[in-house]
Image 1 (cartoon, rainbow, N blue to C red):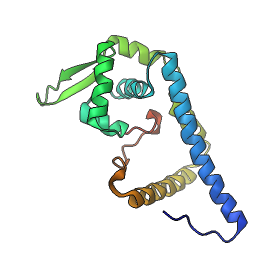
Image 2 (cartoon, rainbow, N blue to C red):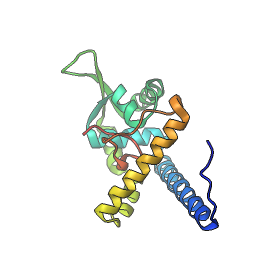
Image 3 (cartoon, rainbow, N blue to C red):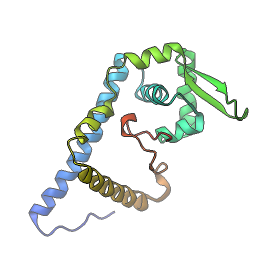
Image 4 (cartoon, one colour):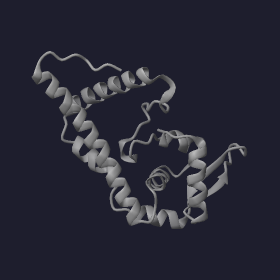
Length: 176
């Protein structure tokens, strides 16, 4: 993908600063998640599962995979290890017995409460400095950037985040 041509040095510097800021935010998000996970003897994805389930209650494997923007097979391995550690349990849905729901065990709930701050809560707090109009404008710009990247890479990316995206879950999507 070719970068836009910037004739003015100032415009090029602004473009570079935007890219640097996006990389910084992503890197800090990952660093904070890994720090919190390590402190609680978890992996980053396991911490994400803990926080998602603590906030939502229960999800099917497919819903959890979509929320984490990863494949079912990847999440199955994460859940297997978490189930072995008595952090989550699988339960048949009462509405549809074919669906297996995943929920936190009492041990998993206690662990979720012991994690002092969700990494994305820090960014949510920073975003509160924006006016509602600035936040809407930023969201439109980010959505446009995301669409451009997805269009450029075609089917190589995970499913698109939609209106159910919740920044408090480290980029994971949640159901309304």
